[in-house]
Amino acid sequence: MVNDLNEVLKYADNQREFVITLYREFIPIKALAPENGGDGEWDRANYLLNVVRKYFDEVKVIEASDNRVSRGSRPNIVALIKGLDMSRTYWVIAHMDTVPEGDRSLWSYDPFKATVVSDTIYGRGVEDDGQGIVMGITVGKVLRELGIKPPINYGLILASDEEVNSKYGIRYVIDKEPNLITGRDLVVVPDAGNADGTMIEIAEKGILWVKVTVYGKQAHASLPELGLNAYRLGSELTLEIDRKLHETFNHEDALFIPPKSTFEPTKVEPNVGNVNTIPGRHVFYIDCRILPKYNIDDVLKIIKDTASNYCSSHGCRVDIEVISRDDPVQPTSADSEIVRRLSKAIRVVRGLEPRLMGIGGGTYARYLRARGIPVAVWMTSKETAHAPDEHVLLTDVINDIKTVVVSLLTEP
Ligand SMILES: [Zn+2]
Image 1 (cartoon, rainbow, N blue to C red):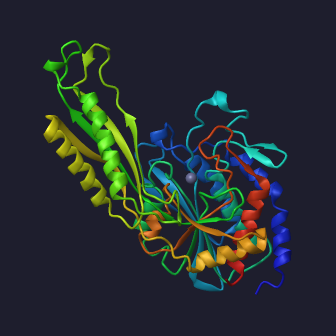
Image 2: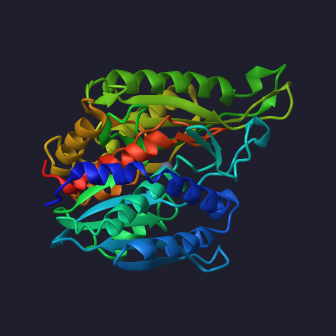
Image 3: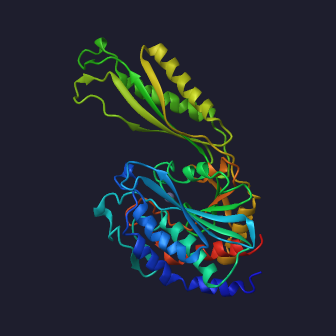
């Protein structure tokens, strides 16, 4: 249907100036969630809306009310270019919000200016998820300017709130409009990837964060028999739980990196302020990343049973609290159409063999997969998200645009 794909790819190659201009205009407009000390995404969304309206047939905003920000809502932009078959859509879903710049002294460039140094662009959010934004918009521009009607609709969603928990972002969008994205659609989430663009993420582990509070008895450090050292008990319990979890949930799945479930004791809360007091309370946290074959309730049960057994034999008391829980969802099938289309496009554009993978991190693909929508999480990434000197290579951005165009326009 497209007579000359090479023509289209050449046109995409010529979008470097457009990409740079786009970055230079929206990177200085901050888009931080209130949890991160910001006023939401509306300023950036208003700029992007003007750009998107030039290239898409239909554009709307789904607003999620949020009284913590001055506009009273968080914007989610939904844009569509109509295809020959209008019953299906190829979606690119990116997020507009970013995390703060972090320690400014660690940056070599102003985080809120997109600085171009030969093929590299630096700035907070240029990768996460500016790369997805720029890719998604530029694909629309290429289609529009070449007068190409894609075989199915091409849709772009620029969502809010990904960096916190997507409550006002993609989760709100799919709750509010459950028929917007369906299981027949094709979805790419450009929000994680590897350096040569060969990794297609099709699965994510479940995530469980648990807070464990051990209560002993505070006393003078010189008279331990009068107290019950919650720090010592908590430390032993930490290792006990750690051992039990690793022993019980030891299955390996080669799709995932790393291939096993992971269980890591992480944060410890401060206890007493002075050296000569035995702490009566010890609080620690465990980060669990769980393979989809396991049930989070079973993991929780092991933690609870281990803790209560330990405390009943040591005279302490223990509280277990779930801080955050994302149950593992069924992975996207390796044979799904979006994976096949993207794989073929990676071979055509990059000349490389794609690799399907599962990760321990979480993207909002999980919310879509939970509804039976196949999702490929993919982009080319130097993995500098959230770091100082976050950057992308212009060549990678252009190659990603070409890859998505090819996967949209050609049969798998
Ligand atoms: Zn992101």
